[in-house]
Image (cartoon, rainbow, N blue to C red):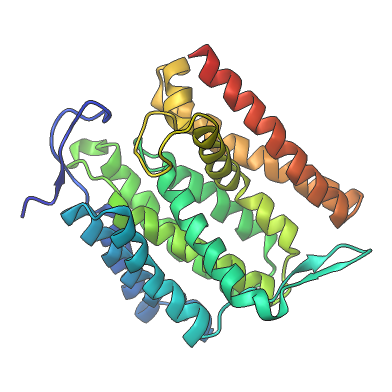
Length: 306
């Protein structure tokens, strides 16, 4: 059916490769709703509507939508969960001296955050295993962070098909190679975004710790766009300035690139958790901002070195 990614000068693969990995994962998740007893309407709904987001990504992969068309279609399933199903952030946590409550700004704030985070995940889909392993690092953090056994089960259900996809992505056991495609990157960004919202709203985990669990995605998205604004570049143009490209140019190793990114995300979380656990939430929030500045400066040095 010609559902393949064609090589070009900015892509590392050498022959057309199927980009249906994300669609396969979304179908596996839909089936899992029937096979496993995941209690909770919101959790089932997130997986179900996630299939719609995977379809949006699949359409983009197939027809190469412009940025306006892509964002317009992305907004539909996001808008449905936030406005129709009322799954939106209502607070950003208690920081001793003050509380960050969103009140009437909850809906637009959630819509913007989810849209940006989904596209932050899309930024990591440019090298074998990068997005999948980075997503697994976040999901693993959440698994050990969240006390709810129900959400732990959901996380396992999400991780399993990603691990199976990785076997195909790296062509292990001589299996045919697959890419996630936009269907996969948008799906993972969408599902993880709304799981974070659900956890925050249930007050199972402080929001600043949830932010630390996705620090690498947030930092990279902000850093690359600030850098492009500084250089007066088009924000929506694909390029070789993403973190995985920059690290790969230094290491010439996909393994080291993926390990560096996933390990960095876990290290960021450990810093955030320790500051939260042994000092307070406000200190953790301040460190989150400080570490972004450090990340941005170090990233700039890597680019300059290149």
